[in-house]
Image (cartoon, rainbow, N blue to C red; front, side, top):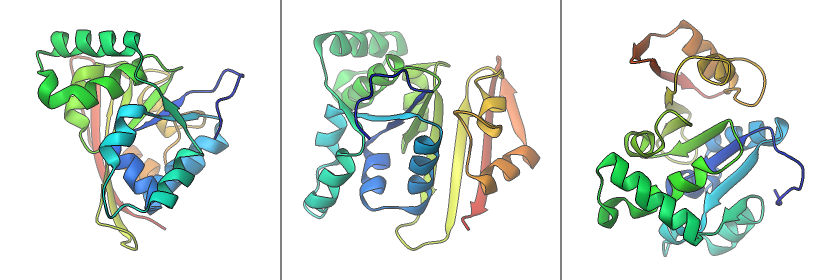
Amino acid sequence: MTRASATPAGTLVLDSEGLAKAVLRAREVTQWLALARADDLRVITSAATVVEVAHPRLNRAALEWTLSRLVVEPVTEPIARRATAILAEAGLHGHRHAIDAMLSATALGAPGPVTVLTSDPEDIATLCGQNVTVIKVLYDGPGIDGAGWTISTGAVGTSSLGGIMGSGSHRLPLPLAGLLAAGNHHGSHGSCTATARAEVT
């Protein structure tokens, strides 16, 4: 996916785990990427995340191919300043949370609605507040059929839980949408969190 001049329908953000699983073509992440393309979502990550995902066993050619299909956002001075501000607001230390903060600042500046695929939903939700939808994908590795998702959304509304479950820029893979519709939802202070597990078909 290249940087488009047209206004996207929303943004899908990959953290290091989301990016690594995209490189490995993990099934549930490729489903999200297919949905993003179908719904004209802009798929992005942070330049800091590209560095974080580096690993001797990660196939470099596969990484470069994956990066060619999304937008790598630079860590500019405004992004750094916003990351510093949201760390202060959350009471978190940059030494431990710097990359999450830079990714969160990037997500907060992206066209909405914004969804973040992450292995660290608690910290991302803390840093982003209720301005994004945070998705944790639980996955046991390539070729494993069992998968789980944890979905944390902001206040229920047209771009929150209803938008995720329905058509439009926040559709879930069909097995999860059905489970989420039938599952338990726990609201707190205007927020809604749901957990579901499904076999990917």
